[in-house]
Image 1 (spheres, rainbow, N blue to C red):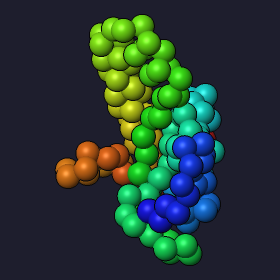
Image 2 (cartoon, rainbow, N blue to C red):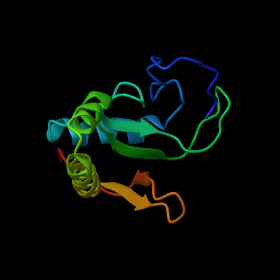
Image 3 (cartoon, rainbow, N blue to C red):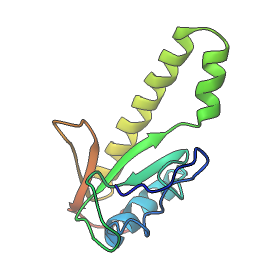
Image 4 (cartoon, rainbow, N blue to C red):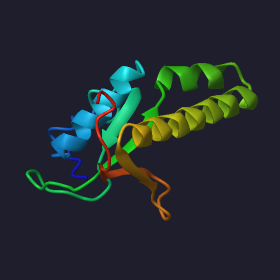
Amino acid sequence: MVDDIDTDDWPGYTPEEIHLPTDLVERIRLVCSLLYLPVAERHGMPGVALAREEVWKPGEPTDHVTICWNVSDKLFDAAEAQGSDDRAEHLWGATDALEYGLVDALRRGGLRVDRDSGTQDWKVLGIDGPSPLN
């Protein structure tokens, strides 16, 4: 990604700013809303984060969406401040479980989701089925 921002509090790009496919973003948001899962407004925020993996230039579209579950930095900081590696490990385990649940829900919502064998990122590659509202 193009990243010319040099500040730690920069919130990240919105799905629209990085030209993610509108149909996929809308379906992901629909499925997440049915589960009451928050979708991060920007890719660096907590919740279901929508991003793209390849380097891009402004205005350049992509054909898929990369998804993950972002946890608040404050939550990880609190786990580390308690001085227990177990707490951070449990938090990572919970994050992984949420991602697997999210992937299952997106698939049941008519989306084709695969894991990249190299990066291990989850990718929403297309719409395979009807809307979960049909």
